[in-house]
Image 1 (cartoon, rainbow, N blue to C red):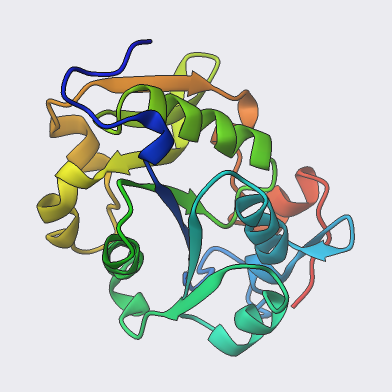
Image 2 (cartoon, rainbow, N blue to C red):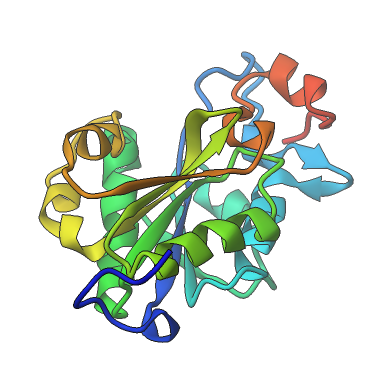
Length: 213
């Protein structure tokens, strides 16, 4: 795909990853387990996701923490990412997206890849394919992961959506912005991993994880 007329060279386009780690795991069991502290192949899910993000071609990775921040941040020690605490995490996912977005924009990012930390099958290769598609589009398109033709996560949002991102509220994420935007939308099929997140103990076990924390 050729660059959009007037867009910058793909070599100069920078993508930051916003890794969302602040949620309260409200669909977990009554024993207060945290989904992001559950383990896959002996590694906590949050560290697994952060490691995939860190190994990608993203220029920077911002992990936004909130609920049980000290345990989550301890699990992230040694991974090459920046950690941002969101004190307003209880208001919903929007506050974490905007916290990460502000940090990424302050660093000059042309686009932000919004990544949920509870998706165990997202690899650095998947992230690199999304980033490559965004760069090929000149940093002017919404790039969304898909599986079998159905849109899923993660998604890359360009800097031109800045004001709309800052106005997000509650627990709806960026879905409304994506749906109403007139920007070109590119889907990159990464397989069923685009649809698998683990919100419950049953989902964690079904995905091959072990309940912890």
